[in-house]
Amino acid sequence: MSISSRFAVGIHILTLIEMNKDGVSSSEVLAGSVNTNPAVIRKIMGMLKKAGLIKVQPGIAGAELAKDLSDITLLDVYKAVNVVKDKELFSIHETNPDCTIGRNIQSSIEPLFFSAQTALEKVFENVTIEDVVKDISEKEKLNG
Image 1: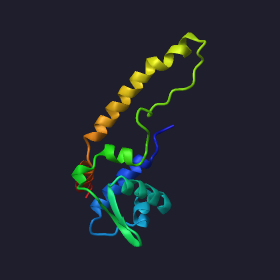
Image 2 (image 1 turned 60 degrees about the vertical axis):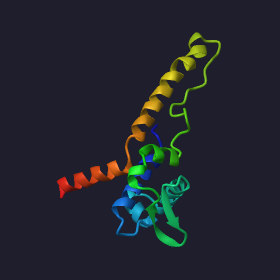
Image 3 (image 1 turned 135 degrees about the vertical axis):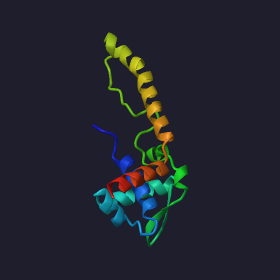
Image 4 (image 1 turned 180 degrees about the horizontal axis):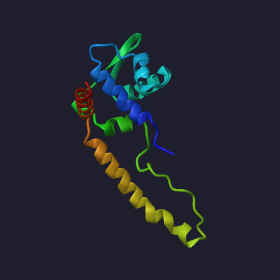
């Protein structure tokens, strides 16, 4: 089982909106790039809008970034698309309180899981959409 792809799709949407400034970033255009249904894109765009990361106009195709791309971190996207709740990246199974292991396993591994989630979020906090755009632009220069 993996983390929801909404996170990767959210990054994809924001990056495409930035790199397609001269075009119209409609849900159909974004869906073609992501290779998914426009309804999926609209749902994620709604989450990004609610988080204040994009602006969309009712009845007008397209979207634009609501903040400077250097001010949008991957952590902002991660939180906007509800990948996981705080301290819930790793879930812990129900245990048997009558068992030595069952009675103690949660309190033994919970701090490790919390530390791992905190470290992951720290990485996301230090990477912006601008970094992603620059990386893609560099790759395109090498391939072009």
